[in-house]
Image (cartoon, rainbow, N blue to C red; front, side, top):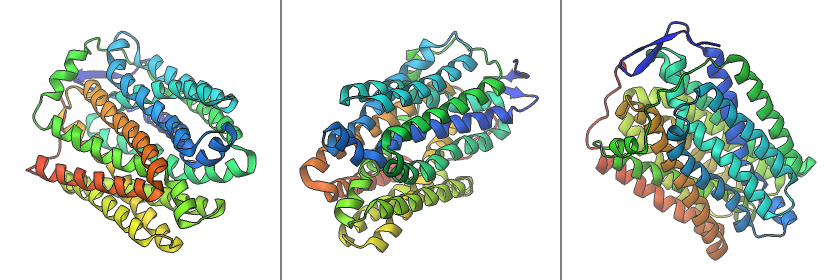
Length: 402
């Protein structure tokens, strides 16, 4: 298949926007994010069957994020001569292989090895997501395309945690990963049928990332991004143990609260466009501020299921706007280096997930679930302060690229 596009400056302009391809990428995102965070909802049964602690089982998230971090930095350079269509299809193949191997893993080592494959797919896809959206639709349609792609993230947040928790109890956690394998196959077939050929530019180099990082506001933005995602994933990775150990919820109650978190997250993503059109800096700052305040409230409230459910939902709604906000920030500050900038932000986010899941595991084993939530809240409040001090002026909307 050939894309009907030409370039203006550094950005393609599509005469016929490939919306079906955008939808196929959204489904791919749904599969990737579902697979990435299934361990968060299946942590207890996975740890029990494999004979390890919950803190150690949580490192399945850590290793995925660490590999995704490295992949995000290298993928644009390593694949610079390969058609982007084939690269994206390869990520879907890795998604299927990872889920299948996790479902069959006999021990922790095999489990971690399978999650390495998912890390490659995650890091690669997120690096190229913004740049791919810019090649599939016209420049003025890019925000809408990105919103559709991130809708896959929100949908996974709604479905993965509560459904993973519930069906893990009904059919076993290994069968849940087999279902995720089938989802990856569906995404692969749709992408195979709809993704156009996208010739590589051949210009990406590791040095380009260094040049991008040296631009004004990029370094402080990356720091703030790392802090926000670190705080969130330290909390989210160990949310189920918190609900079980502190709130005293059973499997049904945990599934219901996780569903509320996911629905609120979807609402937050839906509201993100409205907020970002008005003030990007305020959105970047207020969301972690709300999440930090929620974390402190959770520690204060303690065993109060109804209040905890409401607070967890509020956290989910605030976080729903976070990925869209930082992707929008990226398109406004480095529109001319989308893949290199994408690699940097993927590295920042995956480093944050790595640190969040790893530090959360240490805190959980040392001081319990309350310690994890308190640590998360502290990091998030620091993130809000970093945005406030680092972005002194309102971030203007991006104009047309090129």
